[in-house]
Amino acid sequence: MTISTPQSAATVQLAPSYTLPITIVIAAIPLLLIQVWVGLVCGLFGLFLMIQAATLRLQLGDTALDIYRGETLIRCFPYAEWQTWRIFWPSVPILFYFKEVKSIHFLPILFDPKMLKSGLEQRFPNQ
Image (cartoon, helix red, strand yellow):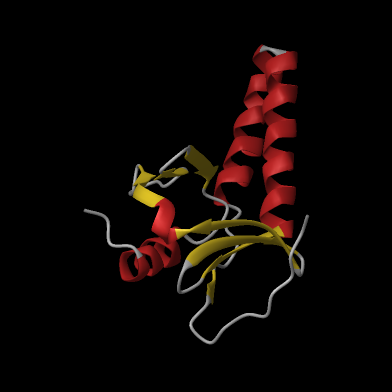
């Protein structure tokens, strides 16, 4: 079931970042010379992440992190259920981790990591 909701005034939509997908695609080129299958898999994964960066949008609302594809809400993560969050390797951010009461989530950084960090520090300060 998908839900479509209007964007509130306090909602921040994160800008897409293509740094990680482009880096993976570029790294796949020399891998093609060493091991064709490994290079192809890495290249396809990089292209997949590039498509995801182009189509998905993360929005930091007052009460939840929402993931949209176009205008359709595909997943909502209420901050009330969060226990902690972290951006791995802040100098070269590649992975966003957050833990809810019943599950953990890892998301590749396909959006502006500085906007994500500042937005989450305002909405859900990490202890």
